[in-house]
Length: 199
Length: 111
Image (cartoon, rainbow over all chains, first blue to last red; front, top):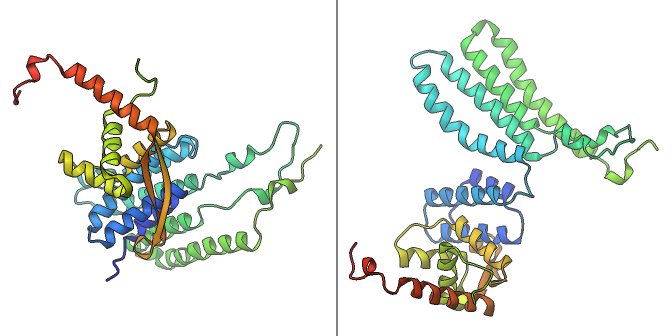
């Protein structure tokens, strides 16, 4: 019988392991999982692979991206452990934790994509004053949507009088994010050669 | 005179596992071999990390094998020790044996 590997872990592997060697690593993991190795083994090995790939591929990821990954991997247990002590018995804690977590995820998604606005601006050489704005990619759509949804979901629970406003915003967030993604899919950034640069 | 290229402890283990397994040496089989011989748990990531370094040093070569459905359509990567790799393992063994000899603290079993 075919066993399904954890989707999130596969996503992580796909994100960080792209190349013929990495394909073989993923194949090895999937093969072992099919042969009966458990999900915990699979997750443990996959996280190990991601960690090694990130730490030992200095040219592939920027230090910002590495920091984002470490934040992402470390933030969840850290927030929950420290938060559970600091805000024990108060209603602030779940909202704060979700807000913090979402913020980290949003920033991590932006950095992992590696095309924040500062990076895009690096394509301009001195004396070339103008950038084609289509080169600046829209990123973090799903992350922003998650942040808006979670934060406004918290408001929805904590402040019932703002329920309608929060609900409307929570629906608008994902719709806006999807619209941004679709817009970029229909109007993809032009290749670098077509940059309109001033001479 | 020794070679300029050197092997770390784990790289040496990986080299020995590759030589021991022979034809069917790939990530998982190497990892399993080290685990069964040393009794410790091994991260597949660390094995591939060492394999990458060994290949860069020219001590092993790799080739793609068959892709199966079980592996999600991904090909197996087989590893083989090169003659330079075999030579280096032999040199390392000789050096270690020389260092081992004449150490009363290490003779006779338990420390």
